[in-house]
Structures are given as structure tokens and as C-alpha cells.
Image 1: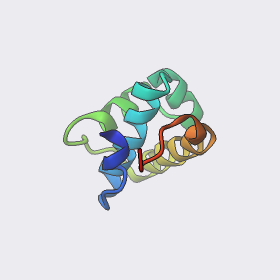
Image 2: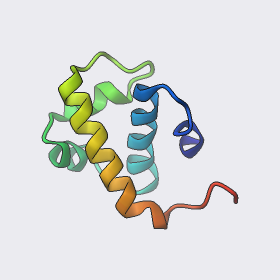
Image 3: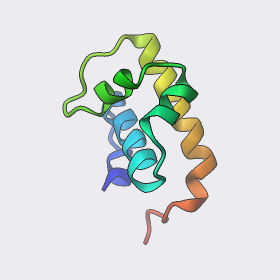
Length: 83
């Protein structure tokens, strides 16, 4: 389901979906992602709220960049969208 949400155009929802895949599928902790993004764990939790709680633009950028980098390295471990 989270892989499907990534195709949505809304940037905050897309970032949230990336985070959910990293946490739920790849079993990365919020602490690990926060350290990779150089943000607080609370910022990760805010992005995971539904709807996402407002986070400043610089923090969103850091989280999105870290999430996309991690997903890039882990993408081969995910099922393909065609399956």
C-alpha cells in the first residue's frame, strides 16, 4: 500500500510514504532515519502523522533527501510494482 502512495503527487504524503516503507518494510528505526537526516526523532514522527503536522521547509528537505537516499540503496529488496 505504501509503495502505491509514493506515486501520489503531494510531496508531504510522498515523503510520509517513503518513511513508512523504510520503517514498516525495511525495519529501520525512526532514530536511524533521524540521524541520517540530522533532524530530531520528533520531526520524523510529525511527518508520519496523518495528515502530516507542519514541519519547517529545511527539515522537510533533510528528511526527504535522507528517505530517498535510503530507499535508493534498499530498492532492490522491495517487490516490484508489477507483482
